[in-house]
Image (cartoon, rainbow, N blue to C red; front, side, top):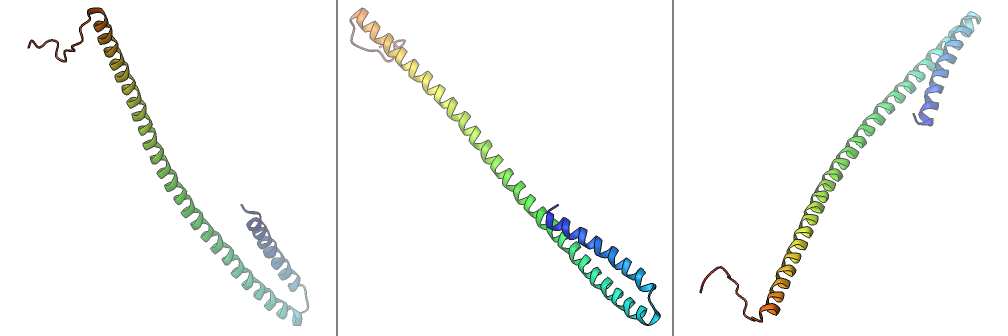
Length: 135
């Protein structure tokens, strides 16, 4: 709990005990002062109840805002998580594309090297794009 709220709660608790103690002391006073002190104790109790009610309303409001804040954070985490998942999928796709492009490059280089080697060995300069088709 925040130090201010904790301090407020302790003070409310102390005030309640002080009002109870004041009522005990008022009962030991002469009758003419007792009525006046009882009215003051009643007034203090009324003020105390109002202050206590404000404290609980404040706590309730704080809890509501905290819950809204946590919901907002949760939604933001979900959104960021979804975005991260999409980025990871794109990264996987990029890696796959890279490997396929590399394989295609190697295949092309290998094919070109074989053709060049064949040309050097045979001396033929014509390339047949369809070697299995008889024209």
